[in-house]
Each structure stands twice: as C-alpha cells, then as structure tokens.
Length: 128
Image 1 (cartoon, helix red, strand yellow):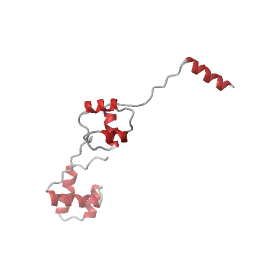
Image 2: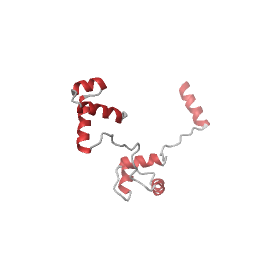
Image 3: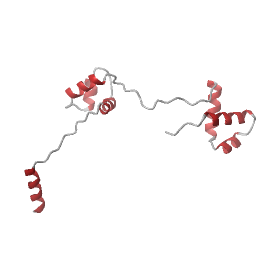
Image 4: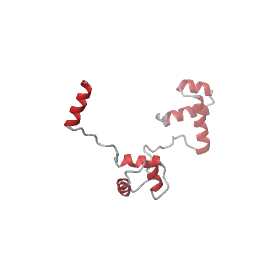
C-alpha cells in the first residue's frame, strides 16, 4: 500500500481552491489527480478535517487464546483446516485457522529421512 499524502500538501491544495484557483491548475502544480483533490474537498466538508485515516498494520487475530488453540491443533493435527474450522468452538473460517496455525508456527510437514540402504538402492537404479 502506498503512503498517504502529507497533511501539509492536502492543506496547500485545499487552500488554493479556497483562493479560487482552478482545480486543474492546482492538480498540475502539486502533481495530484483531480479525483484526489475532490476527495479531500469532500472529506473537509463531511468531517471538517483533511487528515488521512489511521490504518492498522496487522489485522487482529480472531482466535485470541493461542495457547488453547495450540493444544487444539496438536490434538487435531490429522484434520484439514476446513475440518478444524468446523470443530473449533466458535464459528471461524478455514482461512482464520490457517492464520492462527501460522501465528503459532504450527506445521504438518512430514520430516523426510533417507537411510544409507535406501540411498544405495536409489543410486543402483540410476546406474541401470
């Protein structure tokens, strides 16, 4: 996501319009789009302020008790995320289950180990 325009630039643009300068001239001079300027004027009219909205950087996790979820995940590791979502006490989607699993660093990847005997059999099959 791109950064919001500074409050100083917003105030300069709107004050130029208040001085009855043409919108197209203000947009060209400040290198902003006409739509952006119209949105700032609408914001000032509706809210009385030009300041941008505050955005949270990270969405809040819907599953709050991660310790309980970790125990649930370990007990139900054989289930798919969809089945875990259906079995979890509160209504959640499989996407929320995936996010919570990532948050607790839970993975179901199988560890793959190769014995010396299997390696030699594989090498023999390549040579034939």
